[in-house]
Length: 232
Image 1 (cartoon, rainbow, N blue to C red):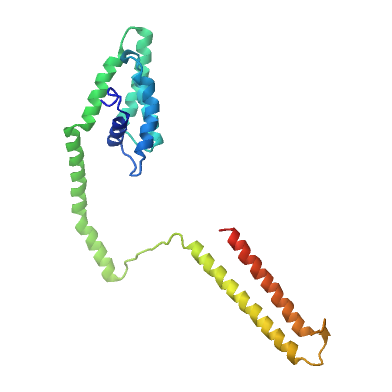
Image 2 (cartoon, helix red, strand yellow):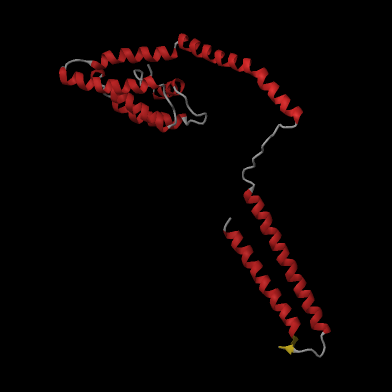
């Protein structure tokens, strides 16, 4: 076994092969974390190794990396931990570790054996057979719904909310910019054509009011653009 050869990388590969892991499992980080656990036991004599505690810690590291090992391994670790403690109290000279190593080796070989692979393949073929038997009926339902016009397909978009919000904000700014431009042009026309009308600060009152409106919306537009840039 990789533990006996002190090959941490091989041990990590065996853990991944033995369990159900995510596709993006970080094998390098898994090797480092397992190395921290195994180094404690590498320097111990075989007689002193607590196999139950070792299995428990290996299971904990595997769980941290989202690797789900077979349920019998988790149960095996708990049983070893309990039995080792009981044996130590009954007979301090009893070497439970040596006996446990044999059982662990057999369990690992059984999981990786050709017989286990054949059983897994048989279950997969049984599931495939079940799917193939149901496939004609499923296709018949699908075609019937398509012919009757009752087939419904749902699409859900993700991540477009922000784009939609940006488009609305841009449209609002364009509208404000057009209002500002129209106010300036209109006020300029009023200022040049309104002779003899009431004035304020040397400008026709109506034209001055238009300039003030344009200035207000212009300042609002500038502040809105600056705030939007800060939030990105």
